[in-house]
Length: 327
Image (tube, rainbow, N blue to C red):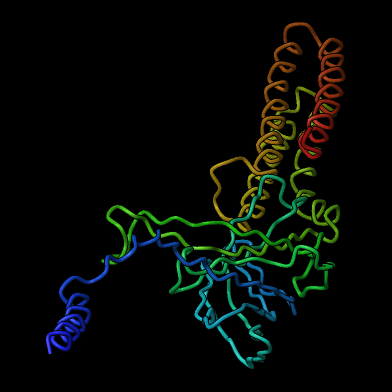
């Protein structure tokens, strides 16, 4: 009887001890944060049009596609430098865990243009894409680095693509947490951004250059005609110089009306300001020649006219060549 009691007691101990004294749990391993989903982006440009030099904006019509793996939705993206006008005809495919989607998109975009050499310039139009919801901990953009790209025709009058489009992925850090209580204290929001750069250039830069600056060149040449007029003929001699100033100023206003105000001197500014200085120099030298004419006579004044006129013409041509080719 005592043996049965001992067996029952032993079984009771085996049942209750694990409940009273649970086994020690092993130490928790370091939790590895999940890796962000890699989303590969591609773009095929259908057309570029409505380029506004003054507003630094353009319209782009293109196909945009994304590929990624896993249960993830990268479809809620934003154009960070423009407004989406259309996002239609999604082509969705999925196979063996690989997801694919392609849209026909159209939008108006803003881009910073460089007018230092306008109109002999090369510009870069940009389209910047960023996910609206997922930060860099959840999504990272990539692109196909081995893809074969070629320049394509565009509908921007006077321009063409100079090189194939270029892709760049950057990390954008914003000096805010957007009030997200789930971010660590002091942590700024960071997002992956895809930047597509489309280089363009003028088709006939030489012809555009001549059409834009021919009026000011003619104004300077007219000013130099003062050296062919007798110094004593005051009205025609000084009247030509004053008319040349008005012509150069008018040309400058017309040329700069097509581009926005810039914090630097553009090619147009350099050409027009230099031209105004040479016109002023021709008027100043006319005053000197008139003074010499009255004090020393016609012969010496004629020599000064010849030397100073030839020097000014040669100097002006040299200055224009230096400015135009941006030495």
